[in-house]
Figure (cartoon, rainbow, N blue to C red):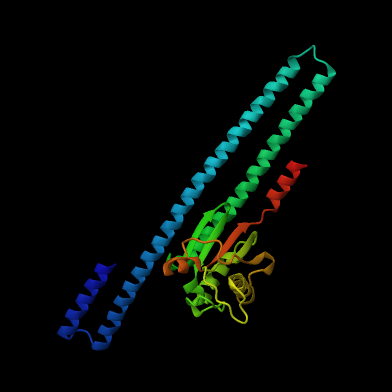
Length: 292
């Protein structure tokens, strides 16, 4: 694409110098060449973002497949044992009624276990599928933000989005008022959140170890909670994220990602984390049934 534009631009220069093309036409064609360059650069960035998202999906798919294979092996082994025990029960002719009842209960329990494993597998697959959809949506809408400001990862069955202090609050260490850059990133995040109705969203405020007491800020606990509340309120009020799925939480200075003894470490600790997890009603019902 760049070579084509360069050739076109050279041709325009020659034509202009020979008087074959008017100045206005030359400028118009020059502007078109510049637009083509911009389109090529944007396409390259978009392709890189899509390639990164595809790599994440491949890794997630491999992990899910391995987990599914493990569950299939457990289920197959349980079924084989069940068949063997039933055959042995049929072949026995001199057992007491108490022994027969005990064997029957064991077989019933094994059948219940098979059903439980299948239901648990379905619940886990649903959770991981929701996480993949959320991850893809976030990668698509936040691909052009730098890793210094936005970090997205999947851990412990949830999607974590870490937003830097400078992105949301303009590097003011003791404010909880969102800065001008915050609206752009929150609008994109809200778009991804609204596409996943079966999710829970917790916004966590984090600070460094330096306290900034004021009349309205008592300590870092207060600051971290107010920052989380600012994001939650904006997501609900300005971008129509359902408040039913939103939770605001403050973690103060106690959950760090770096040491607080350098300016860089303190800047890294001043962050806001959005934790996105699938609704766990199905999995909780399975656990309650298991305990019962």
